[in-house]
Length: 461
Image (cartoon, rainbow, N blue to C red; front, side):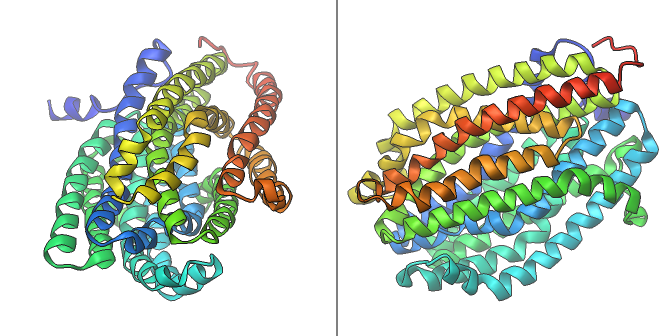
């Protein structure tokens, strides 16, 4: 009976109606991502309300830098997801066992490395980003404390990637619910009661991250079959590591270059002063909720496509991608439009300053309504990674998104009439549209190649 309960969390993604399973997979994943984002939202709301606009800017301006530093390792978790899902589809238990134990050890080692990067590099990174003088001291303190939680963050994300490969998105949702409640409660205690300001917010965040990591570890230790974690078997299988790197490293490099372009954009925004930085940070946090709602379909696309590739169901892959594109467009349009319509009320949650709200609306007016375009772009990236091609979307994204944005800042933004925050924000939708066209062209070519490669297999997809 116990074994049956454990298996009920998993889902065979290579059989049955696609839309129903996609929604059952994506909804808990969407809620999980929203809860994870609430870690940062709780930080920003509490610090904005009870510690002032300078503290708000200190916490909010760190997000792009944190993403930049951690992206290479988060990319490896995508490699873990693809390889584990493919092993499950092919019913290769030996490969899955090696993937689990290699991935877990890599996550822990990555987290330890990131502690030292954060502790010793925080202030220099913020200096390079041209953080305002009134913000940099508090931002440095926040960043150093935040990075003490990196082993937990890495372990949770790699562990959740393994569960997601098996179609299990429910248990990560339960764990993040508990951690999210703890984060909110601790935020209120540390900031309001103990007056720790940004330090209290950072402490609350890392404690909640360790809670979620411990729960995922407990889950994997009790899992059945080849997905089960055995601490004595922790090792790096270099053949498996090579496969994870082949898929995950380009994803991580793409994430880094994306983040570099975002850091450059953040630096341009920083040049307008603390009020603009605070408004931009609050608006970006609202957009984050739109983004993670769509990102669930990107992650679903990777897991579904990878499992079906492992099972040899190539024709089914095309239907999966089309279904994911349709879902992400609808969800992105609805949630993005709602975020824009209720923008002033939502921004008012983060700050009582009318000027900060006005600055935040400038961003929502341009980006939030068009976020669904970004969702479509990401699903196409997920489709390419799911079929095993990670280098192609990296190159296309680097040129199409990052290159265009940096070119925009160097040209259009320098024109007097466009040297505004709105001038910066317009670079986003322009780059998304151009990059989608290139990704679709890549997928058509590579999918045809894949069909020829697997033509000898019977495809009942």
